[in-house]
Image (cartoon, rainbow, N blue to C red; front, side):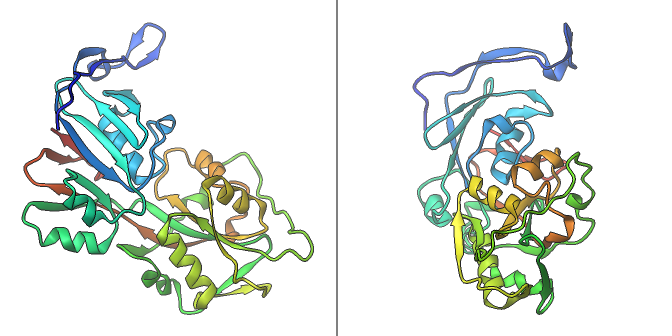
Length: 310
């Protein structure tokens, strides 16, 4: 696909202080972007306001193309369905988010690359000579946040959760970073209103979280005190954070595995002031990048995040 207009971009120098530039890699560069557009589909939305510290795998992939450390090396812009990254003399990278869309359909529709955890799509790509699959690092840890004052007893051990989700997963092993995060706020608990029936909440659209929530309710754990728990409720990100912070509900929450700013992340997800004993680790997950061969080059950094070289 060709862009009719050539996107001009100016890369802004990163500075360590007034009048003092960073090393040459961060010096200002100006030039037009290439005239090709590469379309890449990711499963989550990207908030450029988080840059350069990614909150999810989609942001990891986008920020790797647009930033070098804290230095911007590409111009980013938001569209109705994603973000674009334009760099001097290179193809424009268009990242589209398509949560809930079958990755196989996206590949058949001509996507140059698809970021997915769907095992059927990974198996499909393995049978196609024009596609190659790159496993990304373990990047997400699912935790079960208890209601305030609650406790949990594993029925069959943490491995029982593995087949509750689709995609590649492994039991979460210590150390658990949120237990050692040195945040200023002291842990707190907020008793639920008398007679309130707690919900089991998870982020809407997150099929892994839904599977884990259903497994808990069905047979995975004995919760104390015993209560009616049949209300499994998908909620927005803001509602999930509020529920986790309130202590009135049970929640399945996905934490980044190695956050650059742990206290900020814990605050955004509603667990910064929750006691560590009420945040129960379950599984680590990772995604795979399926790439169409011959469309562009891909190099893998020391942290395992791909960099596109179109």
